[in-house]
Every structure is written in C-alpha cells, then in structure tokens.
Length: 218
Image 1 (cartoon, rainbow, N blue to C red):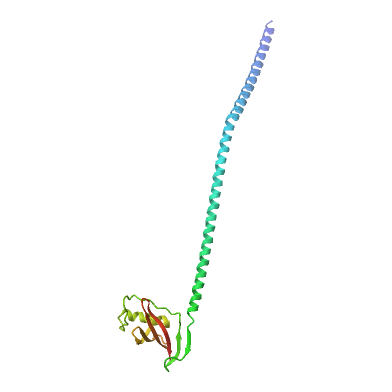
Image 2 (cartoon, one colour):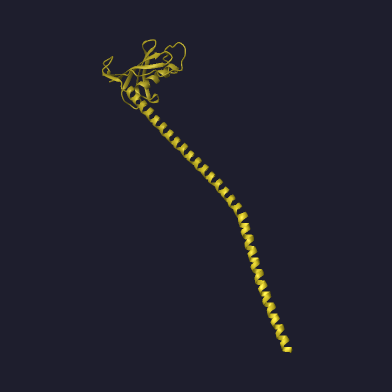
C-alpha cells in the first residue's frame, strides 16, 4: 500500500515537471513572437521615416554636388575665357610690335648720296622721316650757342638723334649758326673713334630742333 502511494506521487511529480517545462517553452515562444511583432512594427513605422530622411539627405547632397559641378564648370569656362583673352591680347601686342617694327624699318631708310656741300664730304644722308626732338622752351625762340643753355642741350639731342652717337660719348668740334636765325650746324664724332659728322638742324616752333641733313666727313 505504501509503495503504491509513493509511485502515484512520483508520477504526479513527473507530470507536474513536464507541465512546467511545457509552460516554459510556450511562454518562451510567446515572448519570441511578441518580440518579433514589436521589431516588425518598429521597422515599419520608424524604418520608413529613416529611409525618407536618408532619401531627403541624398537629394540635398546630389543638389549640392550638382551646384558644385556647375560652379566648377562655370569657373573653368571663366578661366578658358581669360586664357583666350590673354592669347588675343598677346596676339594684338605682337601685331602692334610687328607694325611698329615695320614703321621703324620704313623710317630707317634714308637717302644717301656721294659727296656733299664741300670737297671734304664723303657722303650726304637725308631722311624725310626725321622728326623734331621736342623742347621744354616756350615763347618766341632765339638760338643760343651757350653750352650751359637749354637750347644748346636740345641741339645736341637733335644731332645725337640724327647720327646715332650717344650724347655722353660725343665730342663736339663745332656748334653754331648755319646761315639763319633758326638754323644751326654742328660737327661731332664718337669719343671711341670713327668718322666726323656735320649735321644741319632747323628749329620748329613748339616742337624743337629737327635734323635736316647729315654729312659724313672724310
């Protein structure tokens, strides 16, 4: 009798333990299902919002990149335009320089003839393109043959212009009147050596002394 009761209690204990195990498994499964439901719900509501925000951020970034690209293209176009303008300016300057050189070449073709106004003249040089050398003098002009005068210095400037001899390297053998109140004549040479030149110059009102004729002496 006692054994039967012990077996019955053991059987009920096993059933109770099995039931507890079953309940634990069921409760675990229910918890897992609830967690899955919560996760899916959060994903649906909050995940879409985050996705929209990311899309919005992506659109903003794309616009910024597009604007930066447009600015970069515009900057490149400006740089290309500046380069083209610089090339054009350089081309214009080169053309102007060539034109100026041509004009100088045309002006540097004087007429040269053998002999001159006296037997001691080897050849005579005349250039119709010679211009007055300018002046700082005002009012009525009168030739002044004084080495300390402005007029004297401007005469030597005209003679240097006609002969190509630098004023600092010029020896003046003679500078005086040439037969008229506004006409002068000078005989000069280069200090380093070379031929003597006799240069006739005329005064042009408001413009200074102008070379008229250069004679290279024997």
